[in-house]
Length: 385
Ligand SMILES: *Cc1c(COP(=O)(O)O)cnc(C)c1O
Image 1 (cartoon, rainbow, N blue to C red):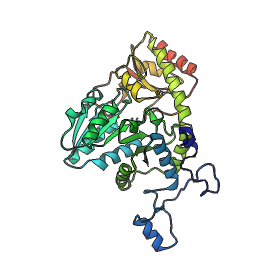
Image 2 (tube, rainbow, N blue to C red):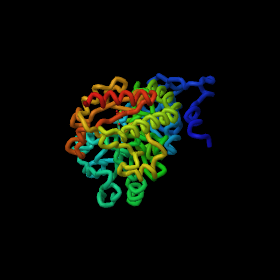
Image 3 (cartoon, rainbow, N blue to C red):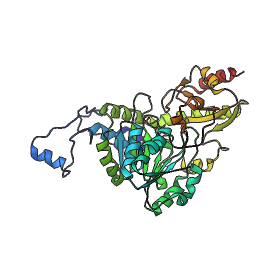
Image 4 (tube, helix red, strand yellow):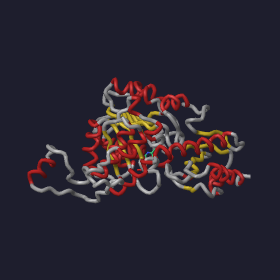
């Protein structure tokens, strides 16, 4: 079996079909034609493999899906037009009126909003459970529980979930599990190894990595992915072939980028831990961070996204930064800062999760020189005096 980085360069690419082309062709075509009615009919009825319509399948999107499945060590994967398109397709694939969903209370804000404002009104019961309580999953299951939705770590506060413990209980009850794995990417956490059924990504973040497209991905067994694909085809949130091409290009350097994001994030977090104006560094690799044991058992590394609690005014700190750009999102080449105090209620998960500390600053360490990033943060501290 070729190694991970070899697969990222070569797996899934049909070079014979594309006269030796090194980069995969972008099949910018909404449909595919056939020589006769008989052959079109066979593919439409599923009796033969083939491409009919890009909302269902497209050769450029196939390359992306094959690479992500290989990275996640699963037999299937499906791409979406955004992370939220992936979230909605997964929820609607498994939940019907009368069913029950267990959802991590520290999940991404719009995921919580979707569960509360769109899924619950369809007649689905939703239980929000704090990550620390998810180890006792048994207490939260009901006879009608049909899905357990996790996110580890959470993307503002970084609470970790013991995927192995949750999967063991869920499997004993034949309840499918899904985890939002956007933070670690499959380079640093492979949920399938812990018995989790589906790994979901905002590929907008690290997988594509260049802040120039939106993408969602879900990986799992071919059987479960088929089930998600049936829903996805009806919802219609497929990725464009152009964005699939860019995502494949981003994936080629994923492990190199992740290494640098990790190094820069750890460098800054260590400096911050020693700074008198920093009260706490919320980083899963910080040995003093609650849940660090889960980090050690589940992750082989850390990405560049973490937060810290500031002894001072976070907006004044962020406004003094010159290299760190102010913005939402993360996972691109550029370093970003975000003070939690300015977030709208939906992003803060208002009413559905613990309120965020107002002195929290989230940093996404990009690919710049680490010393330049630290120098910039010192501008922020200087502005506090
Ligand atoms: C950004 C994000 C999403 C949503 O992805 P989009 O591509 O923006 O739709 C989901 N989960 C997490 C953790 C995210 O950060």
